[in-house]
Image 1 (cartoon, rainbow, N blue to C red):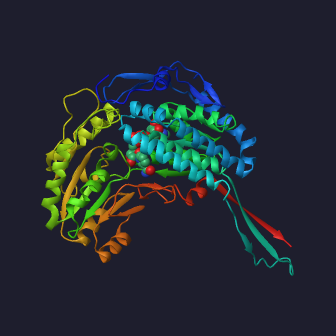
Image 2 (cartoon, rainbow, N blue to C red):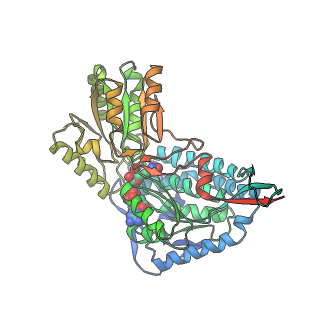
Image 3 (cartoon, rainbow, N blue to C red):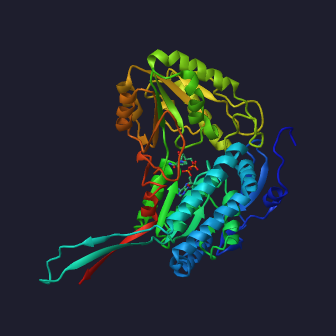
Length: 498
Ligand code: NAD
């Protein structure tokens, strides 16, 4: 093993060698077909294992298991007992934290530090937060004015009931965390789940399902089907046995998923792509904000839906920000996820690395200047150099397209109006940030930015209590916080003559 790498735990080694099956009805189940999906270590390109490729027949079994579990004890369980089950799951994720973090890093490529802190650490807090909602779901009492029959008064009630079987489709950038963003609130609301992880990164979801069984979740409450997006993902979105589809991924696929769900009039919500602006005004201390800017742009190699990718800098500071950012980027050391001292890790797949590279090439052909980076380094694995692009006009692909890699553009702006106009002139509206100490400018930016989240002097942190989701092409619906309860419950109105 290379010096300085975190030693792989024996249980991780054993898990990777396993014959990875589907997880249906509380146990591993072989898929109907022998077809498998090959998994790679993004830091070397080496094959690390295979998972089953589910057929639509396998999906039917998973949906049937989830329907049986829904009709069984789970949705009728006392909320306090449901809460306790979810807390037990959080405890087990925490107890197996290093194991889960290593599996994620080996499969996804990300830094072990990020796997520990976010995929596991933040997820445990998220699951505990959501567990608490199980006992706090409430409706309302309503005074009604129905005039018939004369003299009879009516009272209304609303109840919130579990929406039913949830079909969850998740991306590869934060495989464990985003799976739990779906699973934990769905369970808190009394739903059951069929989850399809991304084809590239299915491993932590499979381990999570084992832990869910160990936590005492009744069989069939959580089912995992591994498989291709256009096959099994599409079939899940259109499955008549699913009551709610929740999707996180690209806008193009999200549109297909929504259309698929509508064929059965299935409730759906979509967390989609972003092309997120970050505005720097001239009153800031560039040295002080630089680490925050770099994190906003390069966390997880920029493979974050909310990452900053278009920087708009007030003209007087433009040269300074470009120079300082370039220096930071040139100093970043590339290395495998298991090397905690590396600054930037590989992208998830050769396909993603090629996609990033091709947009950077397009940007250059369209007249932008690649100030630093722009190439894959001469080493194995799916690495791509941190890339700084300047002189990109507004129509340039680097400004218009979601890149989802370690690539940023920096553009000078005349003033806040110019910045807001450019920031909002995008089909996306997931997130944005404003960096300034000018109270009036900040309040104008908060109101003026068309984005689901606006950060002030910060970019990227999310919290279970803060709703998250997109305006425009960045999605439909909100996750986290109280708003998530709306996503996984149906309102039943009751009208009583009394
Ligand atoms: P993707 O859309 O290619 O895939 C997402 C999931 O959908 C995967 O499980 C995939 O297998 C599945 N899928 C693919 N084709 C499908 C189809 N036709 N029908 C049903 N399912 C299908 O996205 P990705 O490349 O895995 O992830 C990157 C994208 O996700 C980026 O656009 C990013 O912005 C977005 N994302 C959004 C958020 C958010 O909260 N808004 C969070 C993370 C990632």
